[in-house]
Image (tube, rainbow, N blue to C red):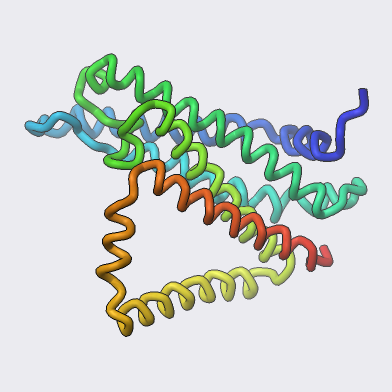
Length: 232
């Protein structure tokens, strides 16, 4: 049975298995070992949990993976006759599968972490206060959406880089900072910070996940709009 075009793109990307199947876990393992060493060398605090941040490395590396998926791998795929939109659909499908898997690893890690008393040292590696500290299925969903968001965000940067080069990517980042500054200015002028604070303070972990999912939708829309205008 002949694979669909989207599946063909996924198989093409997975020729680089190290980047997609090893690199995130390598960084996660590195962060775990580093946090264990740090906690072993520091006095134990009188707290229920010893929060650490090593898991963030696995999330952040996906921004770079998403970026190189387009900036490096797209040109050769186009020479094979793959359309730009089909390629982006394949990338999105792969990112979704990786995100679901990563979220499951985080959820299982939380279960083991709680069962072992934080790996015998009250370490909260797979837990993040408020966001990743509830039921395992909520943590699974939240981690998967956050993972997917960073991948897609990197992918959009890669598309901008392919279309406009480094100056365009730099301007793209500057434009985002400009939008944030404008929003902050408007919120200050309209005395809206209190309302914004109340909105976010009232969100549950699932509510934050919903906000992240909405951001993912915007990023995907921007990515498909950008790839439609690409010439390379």
